[in-house]
Length: 266
Image (cartoon, rainbow, N blue to C red; front, side, top):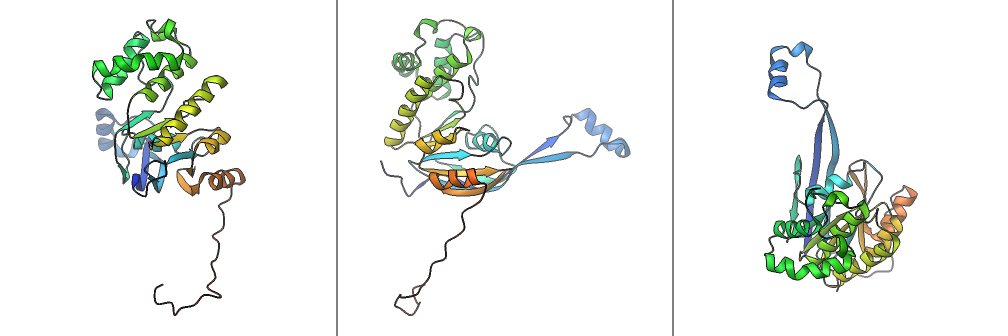
């Protein structure tokens, strides 16, 4: 399905700052007020700095960058898990975030209970979740362990269950943050096929991974983040090439030589 001209996500001037050092409790706040000469100056870390970009509806959008570039912070903001210090993120539609292997899983809950919990968080009825459960088990390949507590699951089994549940629950925008890093090659290929199917169905997908080849294989458009700033946005092949080389492509000059007209329309 072609990419829409309508935006699914608009980020305008997104900035996120964190305070470094000890947590500023009421006791420490009073101590700073009463003895300012002994207070240690608070340091701030800017994880994102004036990040602006647009994701069209139906796009398969890759986010690349080194560790510490702000990718996870950005996906957390877009998923509604945290809020920016400045700027605005406009997200249109239901978002299904899968940001960490086993995020939100309680070790004492069984795999079946986790699936129903995830579905309830997404606003699905028990009947809708029960209908999706066989598809989830078939995709994850852990049907023999579905009634075992999560503390007995390996990281790969947790990733399989997370991804299978995400694929089986309806959403408009899917956000994946390095969720395929711990699964085997056969399941990774299966996941790639499922993601391609979602994209073909017109869903918007944000995909973050350090596997640059996989990002290029799956995505249409992309964003290169570096130290919290946007270095390049465009076609994924161009983004990957810029990221690999560490340089932003030069803007091509367009000449008017040989064209007719007086320039009025310009």
